[in-house]
Image: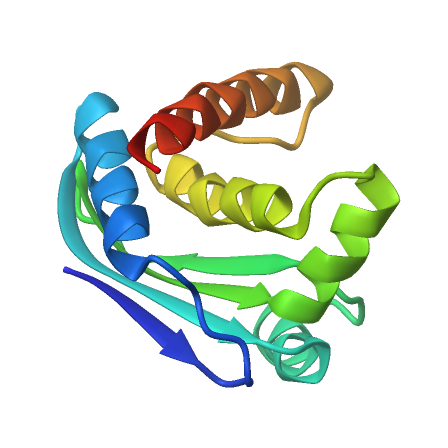
Length: 139
């Protein structure tokens, strides 16, 4: 089950399309859906989590806690809407594009993709682009 939760005024439009897209991505990656919770929040909310649980005193756009069991994906994905807005401006892309990229980025981590090395980041970015095209077709 995929649930969308809000700790800010932001509301995701077209939740059902995003849910279908996420499910298809998980299936295409050879995994199965468990319980995935998206929590949309602001910078302060996510910063507090970053400090408390990861000991990182920085702002970030996404933090994911992976509780997957084998190929069955479970987890909590926290997304700072404020950070996504700023990143969209910095990268000169539409907010919805950057938000979609962040949404699928968390799922790709659960599917086993990493992004710590340049090579891993390149693979992750290619996967994000691949699935972003799928989302465009669903809309």
